[in-house]
Image 1: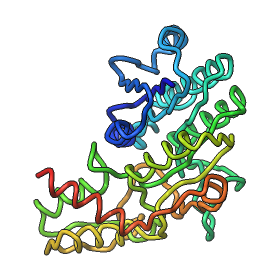
Image 2 (image 1 turned 180 degrees about the vertical axis):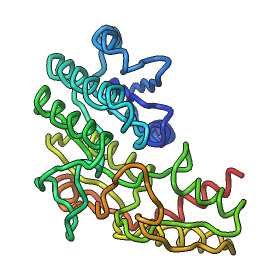
Image 3 (image 1 turned 135 degrees about the vertical axis):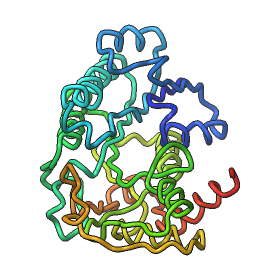
Image 4 (image 1 turned 90 degrees about the vertical axis):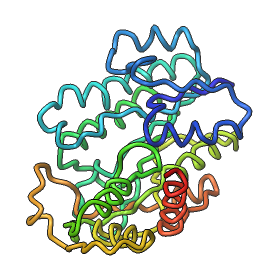
Length: 285
């Protein structure tokens, strides 16, 4: 069985690559140089040559602020490309797992979002990802879409690594205290994806997967500081004080009940996974 991963150099793609040797599959990890999904004319050509049995689409345009000024390119990567990939999968008996985001919701809920809740993205990034989800289901009803949130890893750029760097180079850090969600360790999500594939129990649809927790960015930053035993002052501020360029959901915690029940998935606690990731980062220094 040949598995193709788009976005192979990203956080999730790198986590998948790290554990891929534990599985007896033929792997094809791609990046923008080997398979640039923004080149829409090349998508079918490339897929017709490599002929994968499963595609895990980790590639995405994730620059939230930049997407506000360049919706056209964000829409190409997050919507039009996945639309073509989904259609190719549907026409060629190829299973597709597509990674999506909590940003498809507006954050006005007071309860964790379930997969059937109304979507209403606040920004162009979220809009482009939602359009991708819709196209994915339309063009390939047998696809699996996994929505996640606050993704971090020992690979790439993310909140955890940025906070570690700030703690090492600053006396005081300001972090938002009124946006709440569930941090997700990329290593846990990678394990879930490969568990689903290796279980050979394919149940199409939209699923949420995050680590277990409902915390603010300030809480998250405080835990990172505590684990590392930094002495930096972390100041709690509101979204209004931070003056973000683009609106983000104030509450985007995702309910994981569906994926847990359907695939017998174990949801990891966010603090346990954060400690595990930080230990990996420390060992790499």
